[in-house]
Image (cartoon, rainbow, N blue to C red):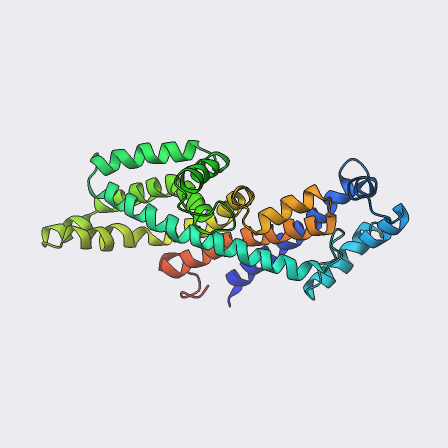
Length: 305
């Protein structure tokens, strides 16, 4: 691992630390007293002083943050106020479910986008080119909070093809569909530009098939940038997944965060926000790493990054 890799890893860890401190600061510095809110909302029998001690709000902010950071490194994220159970096992299960949903949506979204984008790039101003423009503009304008209920109503309620809750297909399809609007147009534009370069023209003059030219001289040169963008979409999809999980009652981090907010379960809110942010940061870092592996021009120190 060279200096550049260490710098990227250090930046990633620093951002994780900033997110950890920031998520904790939400309770301390938001207007109002969280203790009074918890007592009013949950009807707990604990006194205000006992609850403040249980939440660690009686400790100085810096001291509490350092202690809890050390506990987090050991896998201890605290205890839920509502269930009185350790947060870590619950959060890990929800992270796994969100990861399954996000990666499934990412796979099918990439597959749909590649199909539409390559077909559109192959014949400029043809049917697929015009279709991708209209399709991309339409999906870019529609929020996930509208697409999800429409898919739920059509495929789940009216047609009855899928269960309306606790099923992977509908939320994954919703996220994949929302992703294809921008990504299909990005693939179309990037691939179309490379098809006009001399290498592609020379390959066409040698009699290579259009399909081979499309993949080797159109898609391959831009694959690094596309894969990097794909990695960054993990964070974007995760944000959309929070809404989608609530719509389709999928037991992921989004549903857990909304439920913990409604119950004023502050330790669980902190842990959920931190996990979601790390997930998003990891996606961006993964995209950069994949791009450096695919595109040798981006590698440093003799190709090692």
